[in-house]
Amino acid sequence: MSAPDHLVIFDTTLRDGEQSPGATMTRAEKLRIAKILEKLRVDVIEAGFAIASQGDFEAIRNIAEAITGSTVCSLARALDKDIDRAAEAILPAEQKRIHTFIATSPIHMKHKLQMAPDEVVEQAVRAVRRARNHVNDVEFSCEDAGRSELDFLCRIIEAAINAGATTINIPDTVGYAIPEQFGETIRQLLNRVPNADKAIFSVHCHNDLGLAVANSLAAVSQGARQVECTINGLGERAGNASLEELVMAVRTRQDLFGIDTRIDTSHIVPASRLVSTVTGFPVQPNKAIVGANAFAHESGIHQDGVLKHRETYEIMRAQDVGWHTNSLVLGKHSGRNAFRTRLQELGIQFETEAQLNEAFGRFKGLADLKHEIFDEDLQAIASDARQKEEEGRFALVRMRVCSETGVVPRAEVTLLMDGREHQMDAEGSGPVDATFKAIETLVQSGCNLQLYSVNAITSGTDAQGEVTVRLERGGRIVNGLGADTDIIIASARAYVQALNLISMNAARQHPQGADV
Image (tube, rainbow, N blue to C red):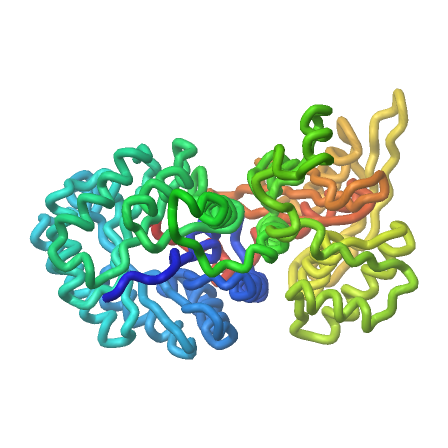
């Protein structure tokens, strides 16, 4: 196999990213993210883990039917049933890949697999061959390669390539590697595996020590030609290598890497915002590339330099990654057609006319409160409209909150519960606390509140507040999201959405994925 003329970007936001606690996505949300990844020109979209649940299977299938510009991939353990289920899920895709894996470190083989090294090699070969019976594009991963013995890695990789693997992935599954050492591992594998030229070598790095991007770039410098990553670095535990950071590092430092990606970077910021809105994970302001402060300058010396010549303090242009390029402002005089057109430009499409009507009604209501409606507002409106149409046991009907100096805050909340209205008053240490206590008194969910955060969607005192509520019950974690110009109402919406998510049936539960 000849080496690719570009660095292959393998995005696993929809699979590994969804394994972040509380980051479960609906099928419609996964499809929205897949479509913006296609706009980004991501080479491979890992759409999920088909065997994990019926919901995951259906989401992969929907993405395989809709995506034409990227390869659609499903993860599968090195088991016949996993591989066959993955093949069935991706069958409609124009370009398809099966990604199979097995653990290769001594600690995993001994304690998790309880298999001898010879048995692991045999199972890997069998899995790759079975996958090749379904598709021509097969990726094989050595789970926990970062702690695997180099000689054994060489042996199993050679066998996997001979069996038909076209991509070999070297994951730093637990984020243990250091850049110099990880790069050297890749160099040695490429030099020692006799048939290394017949496959593309890939890396998948976790961020437990904050080195996922650095380790990935070290591997690229030593010959890796695929990197696995996620939008905003979303993922298991401390997350994965961040797509936006990897792409812009390689593009900005062409003098060192001598290779580029095919990514259309103008869609990076919109993709980041969409993933943040869908998952309820806000992007920290100082996050590289996509954080609100990424191109802000406070220092007078820096401001003066940038005004005189941008490159004195900026190594990238903000507009190249999507800042300021989608700033069309809508207002209360904007019509339905302008609203629909702007949503389509943002990659937002509704499955039903009812969802569009709900979103347009929210838009008009918001326009009466805010002078200008920005793209970030539209993303939040679209998410809220979809959530409202989805069936749930609970819905916020109305609420009233009283908070004044020297008086205990009090909330009166009316919920629709299983089709009937119920009302409750409660006091709390603040208006949000009182609201949540009123809701809990009605619902009696038994949930633990793990996280409450507020994020301003846009600038200005009239901005919508986006509230994230994380609830836990019986080991299951969900994130609820609510948006409104009134943060108390946004808080109630977020709490109610989280309650609906946690009360849904097993088909919508968080998939038990694999930590490749």
